[in-house]
Image 1 (cartoon, one colour):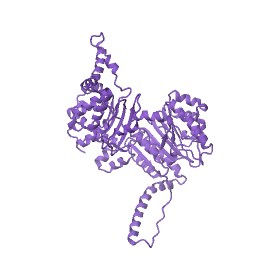
Image 2 (cartoon, helix red, strand yellow):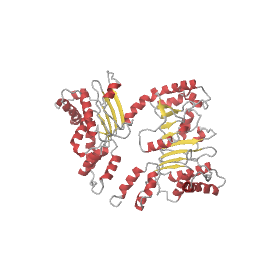
Image 3 (cartoon, rainbow, N blue to C red):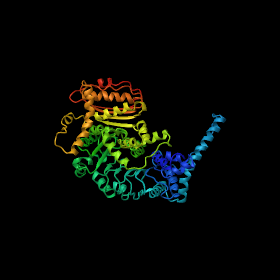
Image 4 (tube, rainbow, N blue to C red):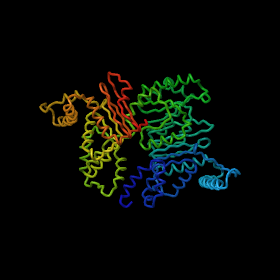
Length: 588
């Protein structure tokens, strides 16, 4: 590690420890140097599964100072399949049908598994022996409180999935917490939302509250009233699963105050409905249940702050969904993983958001000229330009893949930092690209031709020429000439717009037989041919009236999204599919 500064290693470790602690555990065992360098970041995200894991992590926190271990994202669960069972497995009996060799192997394997299991259970058993009057449920709650008190100064996201029957879990004040997910398994009891939220102290920074997996029969107004007392600045809330017991209470006519708040834009409300189950839904029939949720679903189409889903699978059958959502939001991926069926009312929203959150944050080429001007001024102020002579290109590739996902600003800055950074940017800086408009597509095609020998690698591509990125013919024709009496400032602004328009105008002049639609299709086809060996995901959102976009063979493509706006013409799906070549690796 001597060739790389420790500060850079810490940055790399911080970007790697997003898997709940698995990478952090591996880093602590590599070497003493890696152990010391990753001390502050290998606990960036921690997932505690089961009471033994929670107890051991609490003991670890007790051995260190508060500033030595910083936890920003925490997930804790003791529910199935991580519930603690206080019983020893019985020793298997010998069988005459088993040979002596198999006996020795099976007994050895069993002793190893039994020893590993007892090592974990001894932690719980010892804690229960020290306090005989304490149950496993209360021990879990006490352990959780101790952990939260230790990590409170840095904790930003918290996901809790624990049993809640006889003892109330105490959640202390968490000043930096911005996202909270609660899942209390009540067993045979049903607790009110007042008691559930009463376990929380004031959370001033909380923005997102997820109560999805809580059994609750309260109406929406009661839930919002209790949430306002704890988190006055919350902007997104996911309500508990709607069932037959409170489905009638969610109608707009019966909840006017709640719907008025939704329409005002103060909150973004998410609701989900479990599938109808005859034995559980004793309050209404299947016909009445279907009619009520369809009425509620109609509100989605005219309320932008209301998202409603009808689940295909019940929430209590999806054991890993909460942890998957926690990791997805922590890693910045687009949207949670839900076992849901999107209802017709929310279909339009899902289609619109698919291009805004099209898998990964893409590099935007739309405003390249302004970004270059801005970053040139910023870099000119710096007296020190970093060097890459002592860094292996393998490490640079990983750094650029993590850094160049912010809309093009990092890539533009790196290309102006030095010649070495400029060369590395065009090799690794185009991991994901978003092209918005015909002018941006032509600019990117010129860049590809200029660095065709340098092996530019594009893995994720999004292209659109629809509104507001369509080519403005009328604007280009009405640009005033220099003879007009306009100020120099307005002339400079119009001059920049004219430079972008000249790219398209020049291309159309060189190919008079092409229209703007034909030029867009030809440019996209050329770009796809150039980046075909490395392209993995492709999202197209373009207008087609007289032509079909030919998509060449893309051997590495695994995901494809097509949105063709046909204007006044109607094109068949068969012709659209025939315009695509072989895609052997396509999965979605």
